[in-house]
Structure formats: C-alpha cells, structure tokens
Image 1 (cartoon, rainbow, N blue to C red):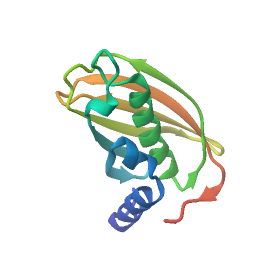
Image 2 (cartoon, rainbow, N blue to C red):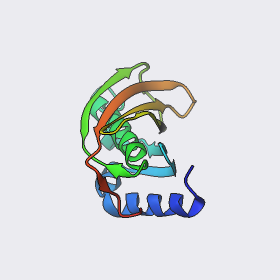
Image 3 (cartoon, rainbow, N blue to C red):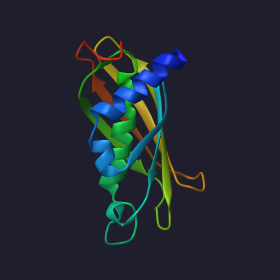
Length: 141
C-alpha cells in the first residue's frame, strides 16, 4: 500500500502529465498501488446519436483508469490489448465511476481489470487490459 504522501504525489503527477483526461472530463478521485478510481460527469459531448454514452468514451475511461493503476506499481508503458464487455445501456446516466485493479503484475506485462458503474451503482461495462512495463520509472518514484 502506498503512503498517503505517495498517493498524493501519484495523483498530482497524473493530473500534471495527462492532458487527455482533462479533454474528456475524467477526474481521478483515488489512487493506490495497483488501484485507481475515477469519475466522469456525463454531458452531451459524451453521447452518441442514440443518446447513450459512446462506446469509445467508455473504453477511453476504462483504459485511462486501468493505465494509471498499472503505472502505480512503479513503471509505466503502453496498452498492449484490451477487451470490453458492454453490459447495460447508459441512457439517462449522469455520472460514471470506473474502478481498476491490477490482477497480475508480471515482470513485463500487467493485467488490469476495470469496471464502470452508473450513478445508480449498476455495472455498465467491464474490461480486461494488458500493459507493457517499459522499465521506465514514473517521476513520483
């Protein structure tokens, strides 16, 4: 488990270095070693023509949050692959929450599970993503 000071440094580094999350509107609300949680306030820019959150937006949320969970283990690297299962529609959802946990922390590959919940607590989507460890330490270490 990361100390409170390291958690704060990690969250500060995430916010400083990743401008894409600002563009999308993702807010990291909790981070620990092998874990990350974020929220996304849904607005019109996130919706597809059917009025549901665009699948690409859901995948972006999962990949971003899972990537931070993977990087929190000490090293960072690119996404290698990912599968997403869309379980429920998002019509009328105002806020999404994504929780991610490292399920395998190998020497070169990290496997992370990310689950997205709607504002009513129902599971919207689940994904399993793989990240390569580039053996490059994050600035916070």
